[in-house]
Amino acid sequence: MVRAQFAIVGAGAIGSVLAAHLARAGHDVVVLARGKRAAHIERAGLQIRGLAELSQRVRVLTEPARLEAADTLILATKTYATATALASLRGARIGQAFSIQNGLQKNAQLAETWGRECVLGALADTSGELLGSGEVLFTRNEQLLIGELSGAGSTRTSELARTMDSAGVRTSAVDNIQELEWSKFAAWTGLMVLSITTRAPTWQYLVDADSARVLARLVREIGALAAAYGISLSDRAPLPVATIVAGSEDAAVDAIRAAGERFKARAPAHRMSSLQDLEAGRPIEVEETLGYAVRLAQQTNVSLPLLAAFYGLVAAADRIRPPPPA
Image 1 (cartoon, rainbow, N blue to C red):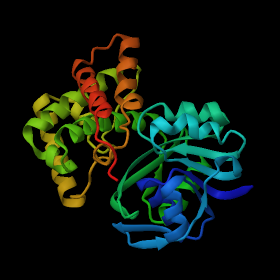
Image 2 (image 1 turned 135 degrees about the vertical axis):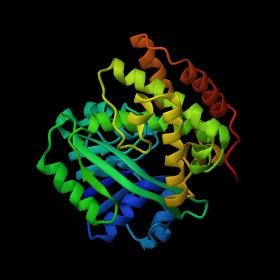
Image 3 (image 1 turned 60 degrees about the vertical axis):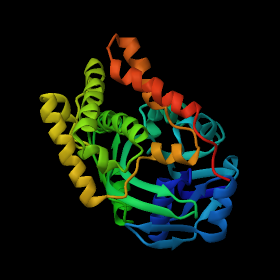
């Protein structure tokens, strides 16, 4: 049986970035991975380049049921793999857990497994790309935010944020985590759609006036859904969501294009994980993100016509995606 200070479930781009930085800082880390990815890490370690250049050995666990206990569990799998991953970990003793996945279902899924008191809210404006070589290109290190679901501050979130920040991944503890998770979701849904339809690096469709207008309309629709649930939005997200929702459409387009210039200057190689998955022939996280928003809207009678249309388009792209390269 295996015990660890940090157990990171999923060794994709961001899971690998977190694991490598924490292990380099001297923390006891185990990565739960499988198949070729697990074999590569066992053979060559975690290899990160881009914003950081490091090669780091780390323990790999291929049988999740062997995880006995972890002080902190970080869920970094794709959203469609969550149920299977958590089912195999139910016997583990976990001190605290958070998910850096996309979407809004993640906290409830963790709470169903270990109880709400164990769960922290989190969002990652941190990006990377798992390359065919097995290396990870670390492209964006803006902020990883952690907070109590109650909205109150706590010693454990402050200490955890300090630990991760000092390891090299920019991290802060916040009080309003659920507001910020919704804000990221509002930005991410629009970015996902544009990444798949344009197949371009992020900054390119952000600075383009026409695609920025489509993105503004998508974000504003999610803003209407958030309002129906009594959720305020924030500019502390990959895009200035509160500004996009509150002002005129033209002002929203200007704000998005300005964000695009910042992406161009600070993260020109950034590509959304949805685009990476599509081009690699992997499943797209469509049902747990766009589909989930559409279903929430139906429950509250909120009209999201543009999002609903793109949901169908992205779902079709997922069904007819090319097979993974040999």
